Structures are given as C-alpha cells and as structure tokens.
Image (cartoon, rainbow, N blue to C red; front, side):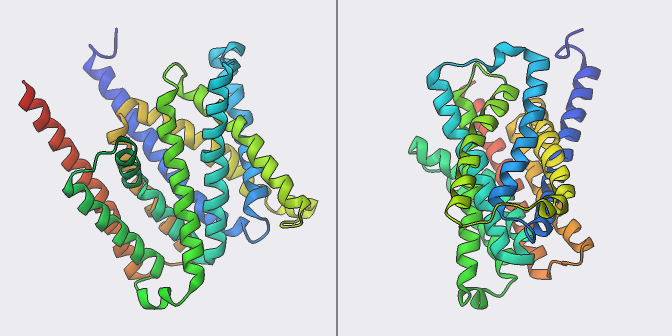
Length: 323
C-alpha cells in the first residue's frame, strides 16, 4: 500500500525521519570535541583529505549499489559546477572550520558548534541576497538574537577581553567562513534537480577531493605544513574512524534521509542538537562550558525555533489569503 494513503506507514516514516535527523546532529555535534584532540597532532588540511577520502569510498560504493555505474556519468557543465560546489562545501568547510577551531584552542569546539546552529539563519541571509529581497523584519530580529548568542559563546560573556585578543577575530572569522561554505554547498543542491541526493553528495565529494588534495600537496611542497609521519597517522587513526565512516558517511546519509522525509523546514530545527551534543561531550572530556556560553547557546537555539514558527505562520496566512 502507498505510504501516502496509509496513516500508520506515514507515521512510521515520520518517526524514522526524526530519528535520522537526531542521529545525524548528535554525530555532527560530537565531531568537534573529537577534532579538538586530533588537531593536537595533525593539521586540518591533511586531516580533511583523509576524512573525505574515507567517506567518499563509502558514498561511491553505496551509489554503485543503488543506482549502478551509470550514476557516475554527467555532462561537462554539471561536472564543473559540481566540482566548484564540492570544493566550496568540503574543502572550504573542512579547512576553514577546523583551522579556526585549532586557532581557538580548547574553546574551538564550542565556537564551531554554535556557528553550525546559525547556518539556517545564514542560509536565509544568503537566499535574500541572491533573490535581492530583504527578509521580513521579525526574521532579521531573530537573526540578531541568534548572533548575539553566538557572541556570548565565543567571548565567554567577556566581550571586552575578547576585543583585546586578536586571535578571536581570526579564529571566529575562519569558522564563519567555513559555515557559509556549507550553506552555499547546501543551496547548490537545488541546481541538480535530476540527480538524487546520494549522487549529488558522492559526485561533489570526489570532485571536491581533487581540490582538497591539491591544496594539501601545495601546502606540503611550500613547507607551510609538514607531511604526516606514520606515527602521527597511527595516533589519529581513532579520530579518522569517527570522522570518516561515522561523522562523514553515516551522519550525512542520516541527514539526507531525515530532511527528505521531514522536509527542510522541520529538519533544520535539529541543528540545535549540534551545540548541545558538543557541550555535553566536551564536558565529559574536562572542558566545561561557562554559564554565559550555555545562555548564549539557548539564545541561538530559541531564535532558530521562533523564526521557524514565525515563517510557518506566515506561510499559512499567505495560503489562506489566496483561497
């Protein structure tokens, strides 16, 4: 029986979608504390190369199993755009966010996770810029509240001290840039209407890997970073096991399925789980968030939820006005 006519089956899919989004965001949130430890031993560029190489193998194997070898074919224009988006999404996100996290030290996990929770707000601003249409005033107010919460997390409630520390600007700026890269990558999926979500993820991952590896090799050749030694690779093996197969492959698949089942407007609310998970895992490792940071995270989460509710109500009123 079709799921659209079977309420029980539809309800089952709904809860599966919720579970998938919840699992994905928990796995995403835990990756930042994992990276805090990994970045003590290796640079973010080399780690990003290994991470997406591992995840990419999983994606291509699954794509071949589900859609066959023909799914790897594409015209030259699509390949060029997919390469650009893959470079922005995977190379840009992995390099900028984790470099910023490294510069921020033990507080980097908190900073990176709270930036991830603001991605829906960033997406709204990017969409408004592309469409040249200003968001409604209440949404702009929610954006302001969201970023005020981010400021509390990053500065630990001491804005004056943060303004006197130049490293805050560099680290936070890089994390913001990385988050924007992921927003652009997510928006770019709308161009590939004929590709499945799995094909889009697989193709952009592998095409983006050419940029990731190219940048990595260039940095090694110019001695900006050192080539990883075997002992270092052995040390970060547990981190790669989590960041590649778990946070890179399984989490993204759960996120794709969850958003496809629930819809983006529902799925986006689960981004609030990312900083919650990060804060909890960091606390278990001895890095406990302060009261101002917790309050800032609550502000950001509340702004996301309230903006989502406002946009839903606005959409309902718009539909009612046309009927």
